[in-house]
Amino acid sequence: MISINDELEKNPKYQKYRDKWFSLPMVNEEDYARLHTGNLVPLDIVIDCDVFEQEIKSHLSDFTYWGLKRDMSRFPFRYGLGLTDITAELPDGHGYNPTTVPLDKWSYQYPDYPLIESDFTVVNDSFKSIKSLQYYMNEFYEYHYRTCILWWEMEQGFVPHVDTAVPAPQIRLWGTNDPENYIFSFWDGEKYVREENVERGRLYLCDTSIKHVATAQANNVYTFFFALHPNSYDLVKKHLILDNDI
Image (cartoon, rainbow, N blue to C red; front, side, top):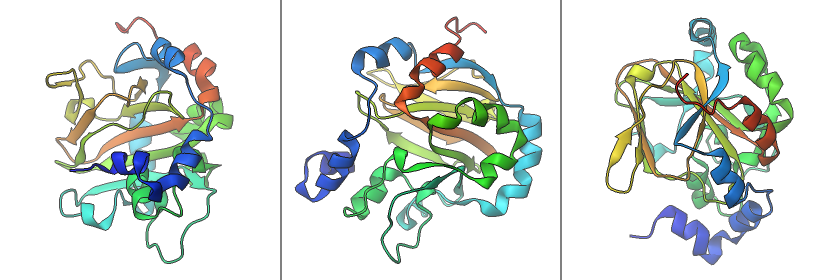
């Protein structure tokens, strides 16, 4: 069976997507490997989740379903809140909030209007109003690509997938409010292995060029799902904790 990624990479129908992708600045293979020394590499930035969990209650009505309509039968309680707004042109009558749709699926469904992480760069009012995110927002202000909060209920998550090729057109940061109930696993060549010793609220550099899968084992599990411009490389490197024994 031909995958969506294979279609996007090879089918002439998706040339606009490829043109857009390859027009971006990239983190080259050498620099990517130098930065990503593990699946999750901790940063010295920790979001106060006690504060965040109180603040996010006032934004729950702003979350929209994460995915396309056909995904709802498998993951009916999976939502997202976009913190950066879109700058790209959209088709009429699409019926989605594109900020909370997997962008490969969007681009596959709308080949004349492909979207990539760099199409979401405008810091919005939700981002500005969540005080627990202000340090991160301001520190990386000039580098934000698509920035989202994911909200999962019990047994919601993602199927196994890869988010980026290398050279990579973005840098991915990740974190969660509930690491005990967030099962995040990476493929080691033979099996999926769960990431251990994840800290509540800490941001991690995440290697999404490796196949990974995630599931929530409780309600109200939130993910900090942040993408950055490749030019943030030196600033991200500055914030890395290279000794993982924090």
